[in-house]
Every structure is written in C-alpha cells, then in structure tokens.
Amino acid sequence: MPRSSLLPFIVSGLLLAKSAFGEPFEYIRIGDKDGFGFKSTEALVRATPPPNNRPADTNGDGFLDRNEFLPDLNADGGVAWVSDDNFDNRSPEEIADQIVECIGCTAVSRAAGSNWTDLSLSLSSPNVDWPDADGPAVPNNAIFVFDFKVAKNDIVPGSRLFFNLVFGDYDINPALIGVRFRDQTTRTLALRNQGPLDGLIQARSTVLEFHEVFTADSNGNWDGFLHVIFLAPRDPYTAFDYVELSLFDILSVEAPIRTHPA
Image (cartoon, rainbow, N blue to C red; front, side, top):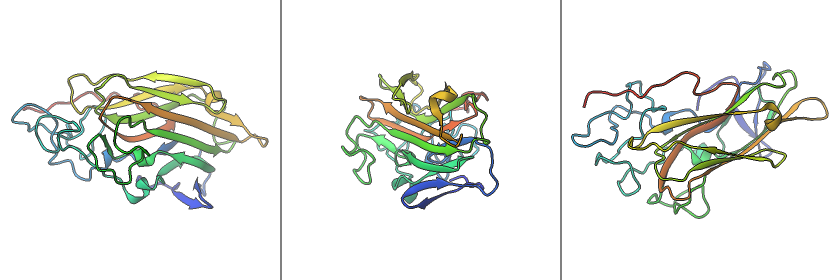
C-alpha cells in the first residue's frame, strides 16, 4: 500500500485516516495502487498467438497499469477462467477489507471493497476468502462503499470530483457501474468492452458533482458518501486494482497502448 502521512488504522471497529498536518482533501482510495498486486512483472506475458512472448508490462516499468495487460499466466494465448490464469495477490489486510487511504479525511466511517481488489474474479477460482457470499459463480458484482468526513476548510465547496476505477479484462457484455448517493439518487455508467485486446487493463473516470457526494453537517464540515456496484452478470473473469474518489481525473494524462516487437 502506498505510504503517506495519512495511513489507515482501526479504532472501535471503524476505519479512520488522520493527519497531524491537516492536509487538504485530495482523494480517498479503496484498495492500493499496486498493479493488481503483482510484485514482479518481468516474466509476465500478455495473451497473443504463438510465440506468446510479448510482455504484459508493455513499458517495462515493473507495474501493470492502464492500457497494459493482465498476464496470460499459463502462456496459452488467452486470459480466461478456463486457462489457469487465476490469481489472488491480496494482502491479509485486503482480504479483511481494511485497505483504505485518504489524503485530507478527518475520519472514514466505512470504506468497503478492498477485498475485491488484486484478485481474479474468475468462475474457476478456489472459494477461499471470497468477497461474494455466493462464491466464485457469476455474477461477481463487486461493491465499493465510501463513507467519510472532510473538515470544512479542507475542500472547496463546489469542487468537481472524479470517480476513478482501474480494472482489467472486461470482454463479456453487458457491464455497467451503478452509483448511489446518500439521498438515494442513482446514476448508471457505461463501460467500454476491450474488444480483441485480451486482458486489457482499462480506467474509467466520471465527473461527480460536489453536492452529490458531500452534505454539510451541523458544524459546517463535510460528510462524503458514495455506493458503487460493478454489474457484470455474465463475465466469468475480470479484476480490479483500486477505486477512488479524487479531485484528479485519472484520464487527464493520456497513457497510450504501447507495443513491443513480437
């Protein structure tokens, strides 16, 4: 998990993130930004026809990021639930659903969903510490909940917020993201099918209005809330790296798909 002056810890059963320096709000992130938990990418290849030697980490920086690829772990030319490509790179804290990082929060009442990250949501995965009560059988509809507080002087009212999501290998329609706000209003976000790019890692960023996410409490501080569900009822294999609410658009810096010679 990325380290900062704001680190999560547990007090009275609640996840909290505090700063001794009162930093302005930047983001709250569920799961850690760690390339789906792969510690080394040097030997990982992407799914291609023989000789199947093109790297999943297309720029060779040791980190699987958007517009790169989930690995074809058995090098059979496909990333799929029937191809021995399952992985579970979760830390004990992720399995226990305790990974949240917030820059600028005074408290995090609930941050659910890190147990869905760094894991292949595969129909053939072993049913061990599975985040869905129904086990690996489809649908594996990942759920993420943000419930947190920001001091009144640590965010500018009216600021645009971005819901950012990094995920891989979406190739079975339909798939949607449903978001619900504290006032029970909802929104549905479409996703782009990866098409022929098997195992592609994608990012999704959506603008949310300040008043949708934040409401003022009696002291003028801000209560933030967002409930997210990834609806992919037929997809037997996908994965998430992290989700976040941020002042920054993950897509604002273009990251083109890079290729290496076959």
